[in-house]
Each structure stands twice: as C-alpha cells, then as structure tokens.
Image (tube, helix red, strand yellow):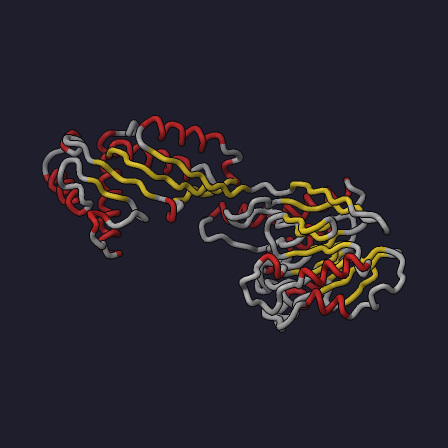
Length: 399
C-alpha cells in the first residue's frame, strides 16, 4: 500500500474547540482505516512517503496515539521522514518516546538507499535530513544504485517526498525532484515504481509514478484528497494501482448569487444537503444585493449552520453582499425611544442613512468611486452587521 502526508497533529486555524479535536482524531483514525484496507487487499506492507507527522514538535499524545494505531496495522509499516518531520536535531523519530513505544512492525527509513523489505523486494529510500535540502534527494538515492542496465531480479520501489520540477516549473527549488530522472530510471528498469509524497491530492504522472494524497483533506484547494493506493506490482508487468477512499472529512467551497428570498432558500437547501455536517467545513462565497430583512435572514441561516457544521466560513475573496435599505425598513422596527437614535447612527455609519442607499460587505470594491480606507470600511461593516442583528432581534426568529 502506498500512502503519504498523514500530517498527524495538524491544526487548521478555522477549526475551534471540539471540531479541532475531532479533526485531529480523524487523522489517527485514518491509520486504522489504512490498516484494515491493507488486510482486505492482502498487502505485504505499507509505505508512507513522507510527512507522517505535521511537525517534529507534535504533542506526545499525538505520538502515543499514532504508534498505537500503527501497531494495529497487520503488516509492516515503513515511514519516510519528509519536509515537515525531517531527521534533524529534534526529529520525532529519534525521541525517547518514539523509540520506546515504536511497535515491531513500524520501521523508519532513516538512510538514503535500498532497504530489503521482503524476498526479492527493495525500497529505495530518500529521506529528508533537514527542512531545506540543497539537492534532489530522490535523484541522489537513484544515482547511488547499481548502474542502469545491470540485470537484477525482484521488485524495487522508490520512496521519496517532494514536488516534481514539472509541477512547479517557475519555482527555483533545489530540492525539487527531477521528473526526467524518475522517468529514465523507470524506463531503464532501475526501479519498478515511484511512491511519492508531498501533494495532498491524488495525482498520477504515469502508470508507475503516483502521489496518493493525504488520507484526510487539508485544504479547500485539493481536488482528490482522502485516498490511499493499493499497488499490485509484479516483475515485468505494469502495476495495477487502485485508489481507495479512506477519509471522512470534507472541505467544500460553495458559491452563490443572492438576489432575493428564493436564492436564500436555494442556499439553505444546498447547505442542508451536505453531510456529514460535523465533519464538513464550508466556505461560502456569496454575491448579490439583499434588503436589510433578507440580510438578517441570511445571517440567521449561516449562524444556524455554523452550529452544526465543523465550521461555516465566509470566502472573503469571493464575498460581496450589498445591502439595499428600503424606505421604511428601519422605521418598521417599531422600537422607538433612544433605540431609534442608535439605529439612525448605525445607518449613517453603514452608509445607509438615505433611503435606497447601498452599502457593500467586506471584500467589496470601494463605494461611490472613492477610496475607502481599511478603518472606515471596517467601521461601516460592523455597523451594517449591527443593524442586521438588531433587525433580527426586533423581528424575532422569523427574521
């Protein structure tokens, strides 16, 4: 089995409290799912192609739980240190805790070059020894092998971590893996399969060169996260690579144009259809023009979903809701007294003092063709949100 980028101990800034705890636990649970898959597939071993841990400074609880989960995997597990958890002076792999608790089936690929893992099977390891290597570690490991063209028997698998140079051609990264070097080694039969890590989304560069992606999603940009690969390798034959979904979390970007109550209703239906909500993070990019009443309804809707989703966030770069104030919308609140004075002040701060005036939300362009500085925009946005909240409180749950 080929997997990578477990990033155990990873935190996400948009997850709070128990949601972050569940996300952390899900990354440990993924190890167990991979172990169960290995058993069903009759895999001989599991390779983790780098970034097993999100950092060398992860909590001891994370290390303990990870090793306990790995101990339950019914086959050997080979861990490659990557750029997040390199074999540097503070490496987790040489800590007393890791050394004491490491189960017999767990092996760290802590040196560059071939490692025998079974009868006629070798792993060619390319571990990271620092966060900023000065060369192509995979290429260096391959260069140290027997000369190309020399006859050999059995299976040889490269296990490496890093971005391929062809995936980031504009970036001057000395540690980038040379795609041409891997292709040459695969064509010459120096290796039979390249098990890569670093990409958090599943990606196949050829029949014998794969990124499995992270077993749990890590960002909204990932197209195919949450997988592990079962690789059937036989000498002289093309491999059969089968992806299996093991992840349980989803990061979803949802964009909508909102021009009235019907659009808000459709947004409600779209959010309601996402499941499981407690393992889903939603990022909403909402554009359009709403009345103050409709904006209050939208805010109430998003607040309610924020309590059932792992997180419900605004997609700030794609957020542009304008509030159109009706002639009698504020007067209709029917509160009176000093509250009416506060409403008038808030409306003035929000740029809604005149009937029919429009005020854009955060992330919108400057209004009236003039430049609005950050402080002014922030003050207006807060005033607008305060009016929306006041409207909801005055009108009750229906708002």
